[in-house]
Image 1 (cartoon, rainbow, N blue to C red):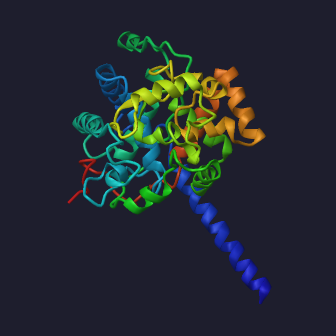
Image 2 (tube, helix red, strand yellow; image 1 turned 90 degrees about the vertical axis):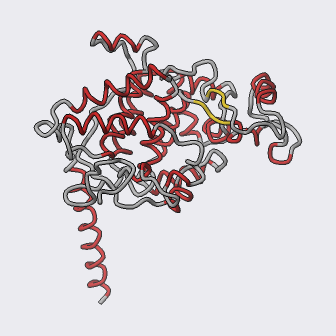
Image 3 (cartoon, rainbow, N blue to C red; image 1 turned 90 degrees about the horizontal axis):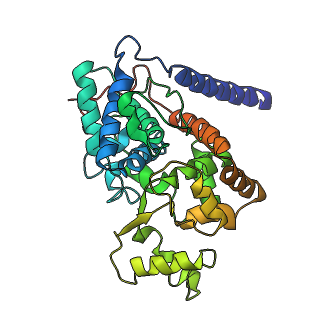
Length: 341
């Protein structure tokens, strides 16, 4: 009897693994080669236009993809409107942005190839292009067909379909928080199949973008009941932030996640961690309160941008493969905000 149960368990595990492999195998870089051959150039053009208008949008689009994939997989569920949607979950409320840019991209894609490309795939491509376009501070050379970038790039695997429902509870509970311990963050990554290297490399996405006072002011005045700022924070930085974010001040004021390198996707974020200049508690924990393995990764990325770029690209591909809907599952939404009627 024990052998039978053991064999049954083995079969269930193997079946699950095979289904996972089949799902992943259905994602390919040339999925739209015949059905929407100009897809990549259409998305690139719209992302470039959005970043020209607002540099911060690169970080916002990258974050949208991240926050989508961590909840039910990369299925564009974060884009769905409605009071019970993921947009209104704590980690996303008044924080997740870029939805209008995705709307514009979807409109342009639909004009070229109607009913073919999923919103989930648009998110994945837009995230890649956002990183690529700000990996050089002269990204506007793209107008001439030139990418002046030594930054990370990767072939986005495509073929995802869109979710029929959102998961607000999953967004509230599954997304990593800047207030969590490193172990809690590592566990949330592990829950979606990502490892410690992925934790560190994907955290490097904070080399671009802004954060609100409410996400880090807990470190400024009475950190952990000490009556003072977090001792791991550089003192001059703490002083600047206390002036920006006074007690009972406007929690929605923003500052750069990567101090002194706001809009360029580089390895400066990790150099800041070595000097106590990580903005969020979850950032600085990677160096100040971590294992030797994680500290070594931070030091390696700070010294060698090529290593960070390679690992970031690899981790983005892995993240983009989190339980995608494929085949006949889900649908191709006509409007990224609502399920097809």
